[in-house]
Length: 490
Image (cartoon, rainbow, N blue to C red; front, top):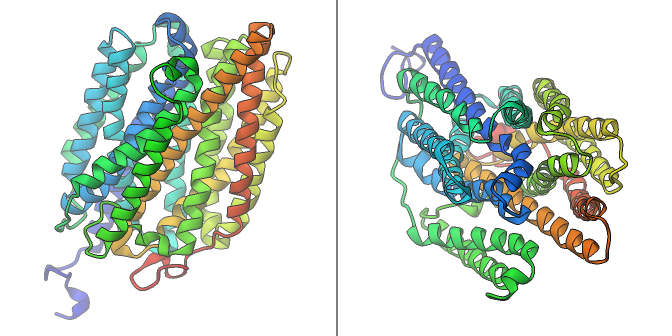
């Protein structure tokens, strides 16, 4: 029997069976990721209604989304360890079981406190699922086909969050908010049941240390930054307890110590997040572009429903329908964008994509109570096209720029940055909106006009931030060698 006739463990190969197994595993992961991502944005249209039903302010309500993203950012670094130490099936079962438990808690929650707890538990499952999908795809799919496969992943990443507000709008039009979780529960249980019977192991576990101090530092660093930004919107209420700047300083110091510890531990291959992935210049620029895009995207996602419902007077169903065409278009464009990536690389897609996103954000700085709903619809469609040109190239270029043995760290870092940037974007946008709205109301402006002014300021900051994404997009290149060992892109 020749070398070509045997696998690494000496067993006869069965290429057809392996290909079928790989397709099944990726399909199961895609389907389950769709379920957990659908849940991530379904709450966005519910924020105004929850503010009224539970009698809470915007800066409290936004924690339903911010706490979700923040938890993901804290848990995702640990997934690098999980994906190295555990096989595919047990990691999948852990992710979906946790998500299902969180969904059940949200469905039964009597008030905002337990609802946030349930969202945090949901986020733990979601945080594990995304790096599991990315790492598995990078392991199983050859470099020349990754653009196409990442296009399919982008459908999940973009369509699920995009139709989330629409589904949430339909539910809220006829039922109370907790039905968003009651109806999600059987879907989550179904995904868990199918996965438990069909999921197969496709990776080889190996020893990897877990540095508890790094886990705690990441929680302090990420948590301090996001909480600090969120507390800015609370003004004097927080100022009475401790200085507004204190959480931000604690977060920055925690992040600095975390980064230093990872650099030291990486020399012994013991880092929670191996920052040597940033030795690839291409990976670094891809992650920077992703961070800016996510800040702008999630800040916009949280503001648009508040604007359409509280300024333009639309209901939740109308808001969901307004956001649906752009989301579906983003999903439809994902596969052809993936194929284009395989042919022409990321730069020719990223530059026009980030430019479109930036242009729409600048246009949104002009919105007020007299803005046409059709203008918002067109703007959302254009920004969705821009994002379709951004996400697939960034995911593929970033993960293709690191060595194979670093895939778990590369996907964990990318996921952490993605979620922290999203949480920071939400916190910053809501804080700016709240501060500006209160200031304008204090000057005697009517509430609707004051809120519109606050939203304009938040979009202005998002527009300025988006310019950095346009700049970094020029430096992202297609990796040479697809990130295989010895071919890290620079």
